[in-house]
Amino acid sequence: MVNWLVTGGAGFIGSNFIHHILKSREDINVFNFDLLTYAGNLENLSDIRNNDRYHFIRGDICDRKQVDEALLDNKITTIVHFAAETHVDRSILGPMQFVITNVNGTATLLEAARDYWLNNPEKPARETRFHHISTDEVFGSLKKGEPAWTEDSPYAPNSPYAASKAASDHLVRAYGHTYGLPVTISNCSNNYGPYQFPEKLMPVVILNALSGKSIPVYGDGQQIRDWLYVEDHCEAIEKIILQGKPGETYNIGGDNQPTNLAIVKTICQLLDELVLDSPYKPFESLITYVADRPGHDRRYDMDSHKIHQLLGWSPRFTLETGLRKTVQWYLDNLTWVEGITGKTNYQDWMQRNYTG
Ligand code: NAD
Image (cartoon, rainbow, N blue to C red; front, side):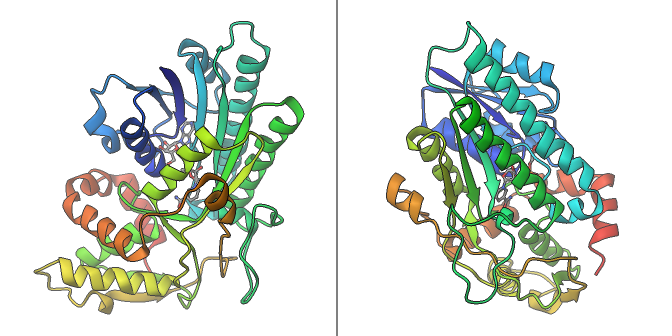
């Protein structure tokens, strides 16, 4: 058995990853290290609460003592680093928390891993790995006709969120280069699927539609993103950790780039089909254009040839199949949704920021 520390495992992708890896591998114990900020939710993992191979540690990646204890007490051989502040709109309103968590927190984890894995005589005898999860947003924005980003594209982050993730990527790379820490990095496009916190585009569209609220579309809605179903992302991360080479970076994309408006309309059409009885149908009538996000990136596109060719990964879900599964999951899990949307801090945030 080996022990993996998953930071941010109570968030959207982290919790999907924990479900995925416990199913996919029987030789791994998972230690979920999460501060439980507004975005962390242990309900995402309620079904595996009693699994012998799953353990929860409430901790802050910025707190060196807590991180050291988590690594040493549990003889951690692999760190899968998801923990971050992740919402671009929140980073525009309050960038400092993004610098603290995403930059200082990543640096703290790297220092702890370096001390334990490289300098400690009690270090684990097994092979170690620090895998850092990042985003395509570090590359900035593409103009029409410009080619998709490869792993060698220059970084040009535009939002405070993207800049803080870019800084963390550079730190991870530097620890690999300077100290020989066995690091890998993945930069992934927009994820969607179960357990996504209802402040991000897809759950906002689904939940606003169901309750007859306006569905906000930023600017002209012509921004282009690449989308990947979260389970496909989790499979890619597993492959990189188990087969990828230390020191390497891998792009992960879904190979589909609809406009935001097209995504919103498709979700509305799926809801028209799946929700039998609603006074708000057709849901498209709820679409409302709102002021664009400041500095909003226009187009993202990822070239994922490297991971396709070297690690044999490709997505199993199309946008069509992934979206259908996602919409159905939210319809089937309204109690989970209410656990979040019923809270005052959530309602205050949404009221201040999604009024249209
Ligand atoms: P999320 O916001 O849903 O979850 C973040 C988790 O990190 C939460 O559980 C939160 O409690 C935890 N956390 C925050 N600060 C912490 C701290 N100081 N110590 C310990 N835990 C802390 O995020 P997500 O959407 O699941 O994203 C996970 C990772 O994937 C992030 O690093 C993000 O940059 C990256 N990523 C996300 C997407 C996407 O579309 N969501 C795409 C590409 C990359």
